[in-house]
Image (cartoon, rainbow, N blue to C red; front, side, top):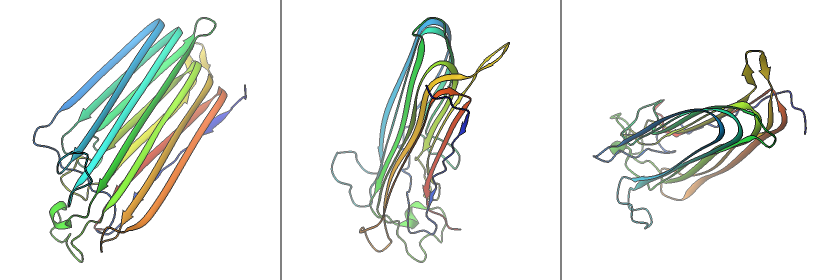
Length: 271
């Protein structure tokens, strides 16, 4: 194994296209709203398993599998997480929340926070975890005056152009000892198009704490982000921008610290 000292990796990906002519707009909530929330706490020796998965598609028109209708905006978000710990002592705490209501700046529609510590108590003991969050949005051109609260949003051009943007982020880890904290969130349900569409992801791998001191994490971990941004201009639906980005960071060995922070934001601004 490689021996790794302190590794701190941070990524901030910001797609903030100013003016009223480019970038994502959220989708208004449907009349009936739902919330799903769970809280899990486990302290155990032996086998521990936790699995979660969600897929959610929302349109301002009708979800029918056909190409986007005139002035249609549609989003799909997907989340999955899997954790398996065996032959060790595990502390696992997780909260999960899905909220289909309209959100404002800094609020999320999907939010997952996980904290886990593990130390093997027998040969072959380990904890393996993975987590992925995806946000895929597409929209035909729409009237800015219909989607933005500001009464001057229609000037000089009353158009929010077409776009097709997808962002994915997540992590994996395989440890015989260590602590892992992850946070995943996105927001895309809004009544006002000036509220940006967002996705955030963080993984932090740390030493295992005991009364006698800290034990460095041992094993492997990685975090990643992938994005494909396609935007039109105000004068039609022809593609005027194409941005592809990917980044993966990983560590294998004795881990003193591993942190990766990912932030995506896309929206219009009147500033």
